Image (tube, rainbow over the protein chains, first blue to last red):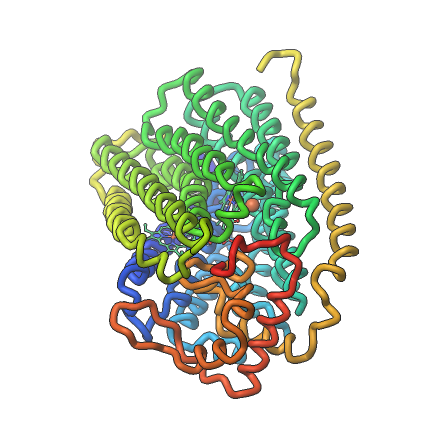
Length: 459
Length: 141
Ligand code: HEM
Ligand code: HEM
Ligand SMILES: [Fe+2]
């Protein structure tokens, strides 16, 4: 750690990992409800568990992004953070707001929560991923703005590198596109159209800038490859991201009431979206192969390479699988979508955060890398979590193919619920793989508590 | 990547590409918004439909069901349920929940009154009349 104020990243990372654990526990509850339908009913209905699962996911990823920025920006700008105090304050605001929101979901009926929190004044709730009550949404905007102010001021007073610039662009974009979550017209078609401006333009737009910047930073640190080379790659990757991904939004405009021409725009442009993910993989491997130093933190390198491969598989390959309109006609809103959602989110945004944490956390604790035993444990966690997400994806893909075959093809299609009964076995398998994921996550957390007596001192 | 291709060139492609395609996206959005009235039949969005959407949202129906293919995949598609089941079935169904059948997926009881039930049905009726380019593939959704 080169700058004292980078230390503020630590609570953000710890909170991120804690919420990650919560996310997985609720995933397992839902996975069980998929096969034993009345499990925990009516205490935790499926939709409540789902809100908790997906909102914790988003919130912990945001914690991860913010922590990463607080670690990365001072080092890139070569100056202390503008205000560590503000960063600490926002940490508590965000954590408390997040916790209250989850408690609200779990203890109050959603309709009551809505009327308690001003949803009748400005209705924004009850839309997928944007279920948060109005005060939480406003809180997210405030935290984001204060955070952006803090890191932007830091960059302004220090060295301006391409990596910080791209990271800032991505984070500003994140905040700006979140504003569409406040727009909820009573016309469902318009509602859906602009809902995707938050959801798609996040994960297939501005978040990829954040991902690229974080990966580039870690690669510079662990490989020692020339900054000029790495930043050139970064620009090309994110150029491809936005060139394909913006119009690629059209792959969500096939069947929601929007004009037919979106089938062409959406299919063609989103079919090119795997390119930047593929380049990310090539980039990561290339830089590691051309490394100029042997960094003692082996497991951070593993996470960085894993991010490249898994984001390409999850977003690139599984995205491409269902993105062409004639295919999407059958796969739209099935388990295929869930399969893709899991591998893409894990491969891209979970893994890049864990890459950053893996690199930065030892530094924050005063050493350049953890002990071998600790790294070995983390590697086990890497493989367990990664392999089980691959299994979850494969099981859900199998379930999805059968679901489509039974329910959407042929002359005497089955009803939804009858088709679900036929594919139970794959849901059991998914739940089992989910348990293995949990084991991986527990090992991951455990690896932080290892004795690090033989660890290298920070360089 | 070779040396003649510089970082400055890469950066210019990024900015140029981003701006160009975002403007194209705005233009397409403008055209879409112009042509939507013919496809979404907004003249049929009555006060009841508006209230129905509000009930749909405040009960988080999307947390179990899909609507026009978006949402959760735990329970049936409802964009075309009006055509599949009809208004009376839908109201009776909502009132009859939960089934309590052991091991079966359960839907909560929302205690909706008669007007609220009508509002939900009217919302689902309007939704089922949106021009979705012939999606879903069949009536089972
Ligand atoms: C890291 C990047 C990505 C993430 C995190 C991600 C995540 C998701 C998620 C969570 C959904 C479900 C949304 C919902 O609930 O309605 C989704 C849908 C979809 N994604 Fe991605 N995605 C990514 C990249 C891609 C790419 C690159 C493609 C295309 C090549 C793609 C194609 C699609 C399509 C076509 C759908 C709609 C599925 C449907 O019709 O049901 N995604 N994505
Ligand atoms: C490991 C155990 C996990 C289990 C058992 C699990 C289970 C589930 C279930 C049952 C759903 C709801 C599907 C539906 O709507 O019908 C879901 C949704 C979702 N989960 Fe997980 N999950 C797990 C881990 C994860 C992880 C690690 C991530 C992120 C990387 C994740 C991200 C998501 C997302 C984005 C959705 C929404 C998907 C969509 O809308 O298509 N889950 N999960
Ligand atoms: Fe998308």
